[in-house]
Length: 410
Ligand SMILES: Nc1nc2c(c(=O)[nH]1)N[C@H]1C(S)=C(S)[C@@H](COP(=O)(O)O)O[C@H]1N2
Ligand SMILES: [Mo]
Image (cartoon, rainbow, N blue to C red):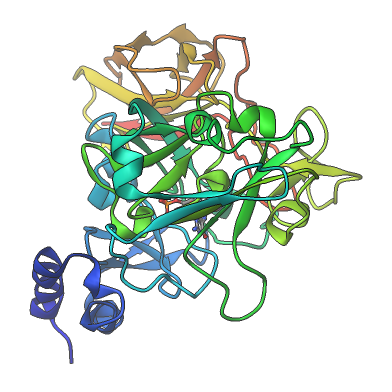
């Protein structure tokens, strides 16, 4: 019924129509191409996925189409430190995607009961009345890598591709809130975008404590990697919370409220909570006695140059490359092991392009014939690291155990 030309057509149409694809033929042809595309097997059971190119996106791994939930193929992370816009993962909670957005008419409404002076900001005002700032920062979904949990947990069975590193340009939230005449009673700030719940569950609203919201790092961004945000990544403007899990990075940002109490909406009070202990973990299969909202990224590292299970040539020098990141302390060291974690050495760290960014590491070795079990373990500047074996929690969040890449030299 639909063939590859349909897919190409929808991409070409997008280039000329901008964001107009959402309501019209764009989504129709996206749904139609689902049968015609390649599929991919994730590295865990029952992980067969379609690959589909949504508008403004190359072929990505599909978790759901309505709403779109797309994962970045892991090879992309070997291409460079910045994740290209067309390869950046996509996550939505609710089926009510915004209708086409005219950025000239888009407004961010600032209010709430601890805001003394409610006001609205147009995109033009945002871009011209404030001094722009830039940051390179990792956006990672709380449930990235959930598919590897054992026992399995409910939620999207993601591989390792629900993360990305981008260069963001925008305005510090602090500068915007400086106009809001915030009262002393302010406790939290809530954020909402233009997407909405169609079938219960509630609109996706998130909250940050007031001190965090005005720390100068939280940002309202209108550019991603030097271009407008792709529609599916929050066009025309999104909240950037460097060092924090993606759940707080509200897309299509349209409403900011400064409130005098702790926000108790579903996505703070019930969703996105982790065990309230040092490891954010429980014994596998067990619930937590108490929970807290998920917050900062923990330390992770991945080999990107070699695939688990690959064969390499014995006697031939191997250059191993990968990425490491954390919640904003910055990566201090990446240790690597060739023997499954029995002995460790230090990898070379490449240029530091910011403490919220992916950091590249490299190391080399020349294998003898036989089996190799490569592991990498990153440490941040305050000494936090990754558990040698992955920890468990009921929602399948924050997975960060040391990864193992098995190679056979022949
Ligand atoms: N408006 C809106 N913003 C949102 C969400 C959403 O459902 N709606 N999901 C959040 C979650 S959980 C994640 S992981 C990131 C994903 O951002 P991306 O789609 O740009 O990768 O968006 C966050 N912001
Ligand atoms: Mo997420």
